[in-house]
Length: 94
Image 1 (tube, rainbow, N blue to C red):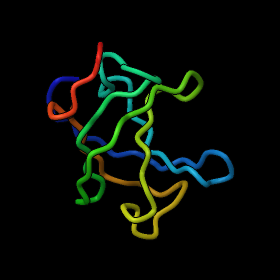
Image 2: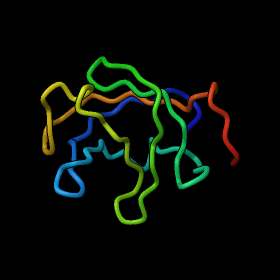
Image 3: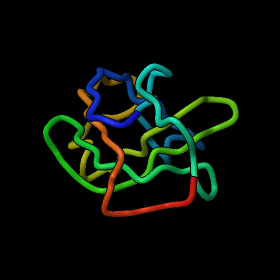
Image 4: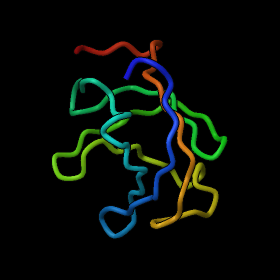
């Protein structure tokens, strides 16, 4: 992933819903991961923008953590519109 990509995702809960993620489809996933399987990204979910990291999970693939403040009442099973792009302001080792 080098450019901004957009997709719709259905939120999933992990660890009893204490963590909520938007799964990143393989075709929109980062090309590689840095430390701890993460890639710094600029994310937009339903119009809310923030800097975060996409995570590579060995069982679930690439995941975008979506904080409660960003979800605005949405939870596991709800659809969200996502835009992500690698964050050039936060370099990392490839």
